[in-house]
Length: 197
Image (cartoon, rainbow, N blue to C red; front, side):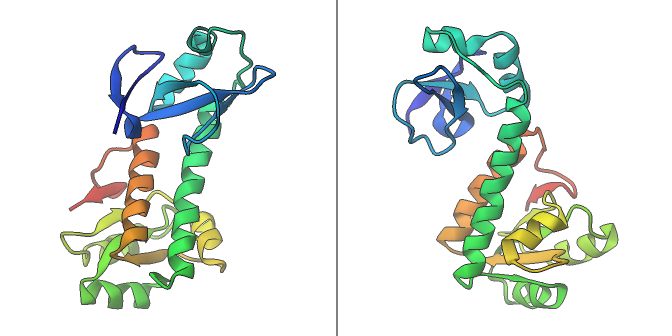
């Protein structure tokens, strides 16, 4: 994967550790998480504080070498977009029959050893989340970053607290998006927030 220079730090790094921004013809800066928008792009490190610094220092004007309009809430907007990618891919896994929800179904899936991603609602019971997460195998990524309302969206039902995604292509994409979401908001891979065993 090619390396891209962060307009804030001036350091190069792999694309997956950067966020691409595009500039519309009328000068509006928009995040391009899919890296598909036309035109020249400007890259910022995958970190909320770096995006905030780019906005504050008007680094996009320099990066695009043109006047730019940037929303002051850009750092929060990107956080929401990254969370949206996780929710969307969790929903895809459900539609493909690769995800289940509910404590009983998740525990059954974990017992079979086929779970790649196990999710617990961040607003769920700490003891309940820990009880299920402790059953996760060495190859299972445990994520406690989504709220139950966000998991509800992914599964199209109410009160989803626990979910599991079986190993496969969709699961690996979900791991990628969870990692980006965690990295952006500075959530380390540790404890009950997010851990990779």
